[in-house]
Image 1 (cartoon, one colour):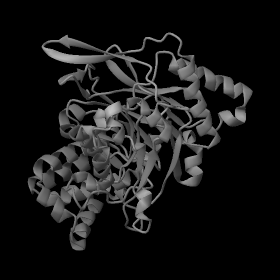
Image 2 (cartoon, one colour):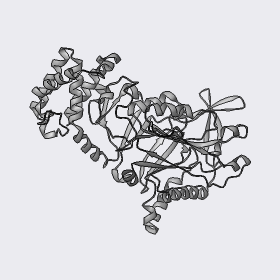
Image 3 (cartoon, helix red, strand yellow):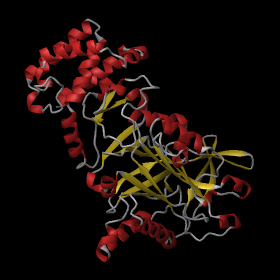
Image 4 (cartoon, helix red, strand yellow):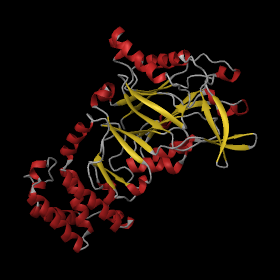
Length: 463
């Protein structure tokens, strides 16, 4: 099928570079007679793309795509290009998208067995287009964003179309998670999230330094005994398991160099000691980020303790001290990890400032049609995350944001009414109050007291 994927990528590239936004506006209201014309034309040339009852097939197989098929398809495309028949070219692209539905579902199953997946087409560098199987999402509208963005992928349902012009210099890595990873989600059609701000105390020091005429800050973790921090994390994971959560997320910068190994060891031990509880460990564990070697990195584990990936922060935070600005001294990796799961869609981890950097956040959201963004933060509360939530809701993308009381500063306590939010897309028939779940700070935190008890739960349901 590689040759066919390359042809579809070429078609998409041709349409994007040849058609204006006005064309997509007009095509959204294409006449039935025009659709029939294109279907009849394609059927006369390539009957294999249609069922016996006249409808487009969903089961085109590799064995049917012989040399004659490719020759005929390429000839048809060239004829349509010569006539500047853009309605015809769009129609052919849509028919191929529909015909490959089952093949792409099979590809998804194959991708689930891989450590990570690359795009289906091998001509991405030439076409500037990447194609992947598109996982559905139970809270995403079928014609997502067609009312406000005039783009080719408004008309494709089985391919995820990624444009390099939107992705820019970023490097995308894709992880198709196996269906067995979220057993609760499959049965309930809902996703239960746990989030904990962890604690009031900081476990790190901040140091300033200068480099190339710029002032920076870095994070050091001086404590050599991390057992208390790690036990706290593990207890929260156990709490979330007892509440049968699918995902648990922790804040930014409260990790340490031993935490990942500690949690993995605890999961292995629990499998032996209490298999029933071990089976309820959250399917995805987003550990607190850890600052090391000029990288601020989140580690993501699955419920078995396996490493899914590590996501590095891309956009440095700017802090002020004594009237001077200091830039977070990270070196961006440019690698963006996208998780794909049927029914959930596409998940990305954006660490604090990555989410607040609107251009970056929208870049990812619209390139990958994200449906869930998880935001671990360490924020003094000076930035308005709620405004960014609304941008995501506009694009059918839910958001989980968790901050930590450890970020609270004595002169900014008024910023800490809430330490987390879940912003959800809801049905028009639901109470508007359900769209934003607020996580209130513990009142004793303002007095410098912390029992390390806080954990919040919220459920995202199909719409």
